[in-house]
Length: 431
Image (cartoon, rainbow, N blue to C red; front, side, top):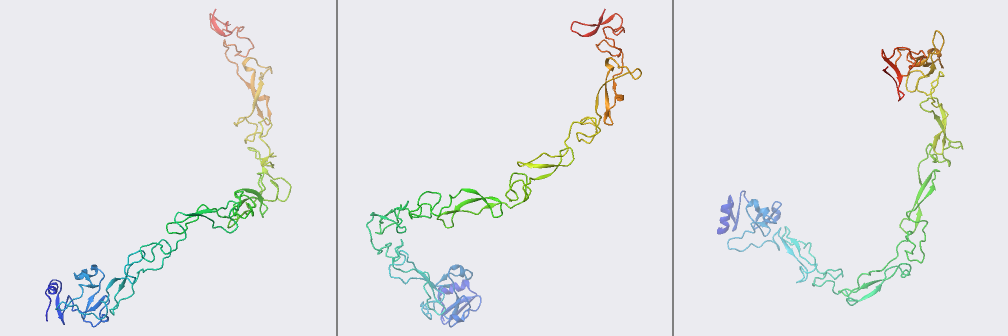
């Protein structure tokens, strides 16, 4: 029994045990599982040299074992003493993944061709080569399909590069009718004709133009109106509405759309046929104009007003008038025979008489006012200014009928007299 020096060193540093079975070195924390084939191993392990070893794709999966991924197995396949790998059962090591390509030599990585991947099965057989692309016939699609480093070769040469010719792809009989006309196509570097450029093809009839858009020899056929315009209409509910012109579904003509209107409602005084009975501002079903109850503020007496040209007019209710002494609230302010804006009774001017003699008083005392009482002005209430001490002021203050200039009373005091100066002012001056 022998152990290679290098592997022995690895086991010395990394393993808790070292086992050599038939010249195979194994190490680990637990006793390794012996196997005759991969079916004897747990999931994720493969049978190599009669022991189960962990499969891997990269080093990350072997990190916990302090090993690297080699040949699809953590640490690689252990060799027996003598350095010769044990021949595995089958054509490959189970779990191994490698690049594959079944196309002709020299085509891998050229044009569209590329290698794929295949995986060794548990039985030691290579699986299907997946995702590889091998040469195919040229499709004339701007790609190197046959992987010979030439794009769209063998597609056939139909013209000389730079050559031009007239072209038209519209329906037969439409070329040179209306706006439709031919275009030009140019031969490309691959010897094939390019796209037809500059041609004008038929389109659905556009009712907004006056030309033959579909190139059938007729202009604006099927056009009932011009798209975008509108007109008044009468809807099925009897109401006036509006309908708009629109393109027919799919194009090729135009037609008037549905008449859109409001829903009928109670008639209003607005010169509109709100209830859609064919008449405006009327009592529904009659020729009678609309009326309604009303009053003329501030008076609350109810009346009736009539709708005229969309406006309510001529309310028959009582209107406010200037207050007079008549026992009524003429201005409708809530008070009878009162001064406007006040609760005080109405008054008017009167001539004051001496209650004893019945003679009219003179001077400032003759002008007075009397009040409205029980709907009439009562002379008995006529009052004016009361007599007072005479003054040199041009007024008859004591109401005796004597002018100040003729008054004998000593108004200005001793040594003075009451005169009218050159300016017409009556005043006291020294004698």
